[in-house]
Length: 321
Ligand SMILES: NC(=O)c1ccc[n+]([C@@H]2O[C@H](COP(=O)([O-])OP(=O)(O)OC[C@H]3O[C@@H](n4cnc5c(N)ncnc54)[C@H](O)[C@@H]3O)[C@@H](O)[C@H]2O)c1
Image 1 (spheres, rainbow, N blue to C red):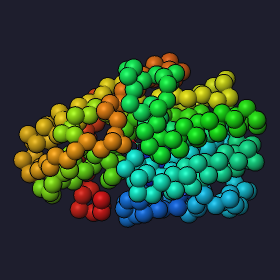
Image 2 (image 1 turned 90 degrees about the vertical axis):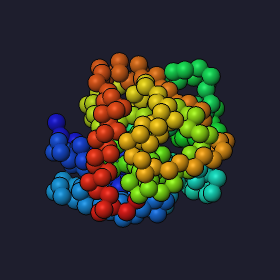
Image 3 (image 1 turned 30 degrees about the vertical axis):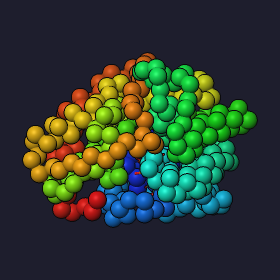
């Protein structure tokens, strides 16, 4: 059965990618985004241009921080909400901590309130691997103790707590998805892989924290959208739950950089000291989501990065990152 889906943050990386998957499968998608300028607005508009090619797509420029944001959507038919709009990024939480409170905490509460008002069947929202902080136990399980290192991570933990109480207090199902370093085509220019690709092509200097002595559980966007698509059809009995969305395969940043250096002699690296906001390693246990959905086939990192790099090269002239 075809569904009517509201995606918040539809001009963003994950929101756009999932909207595209839904539209390609003939679902009806309402996209919402305020097109903020945290990174290239031009890139966000390019993503929207791709979505606008589908007649089943409609877009609303809306700020979820506004109490009455849903007025424009009140009469729309919506079955499920995928809530991805947020102030992402760990570093920026030092520059503008209030933005995380307004967008991530207040904005998310507004989205949940709208979902209750509209009697939405289920809401899936983006949490983050950053909720685990500097873990001692790997792989990180959903039951691990949480230890946020910055306001971004704190805002995601608050979202989870609020979601649980909404699901208890109202007739609504809400599920938190803890994403682990998502990468791929149409990805985010503020994230390390895109910075590596950009500097490799331009021959400009990459600032590398802690000599690359970090590990990240990179998870390919097409695997993420496949998982989200399966979730849409999965009947989950619990009213609230939390799932890691991770490939369970952490990669050494140092090794990635060395591979790029080998293949792209132009890449220059400038070592800078460790940033205290960064965790040493992320490695998500994905057994819970795999068991729920019977999903097995994660894309190998080497393959995902090759596809991403080819895409980047083909678009680099036309997109502003
Ligand atoms: N990409 C990752 O690796 C990753 C990892 C962990 C968690 N997440 C979470 O997943 C979600 C999506 O991430 P992404 O990588 O697509 O980020 P993104 O920045 O590309 O997308 C977020 C979108 O939300 C929009 N937005 C911001 N504030 C808004 C507001 N007040 N009202 C309406 N729209 C607003 C932005 O314009 C942007 O297009 C976010 O919640 C992020 O915190 C992402």
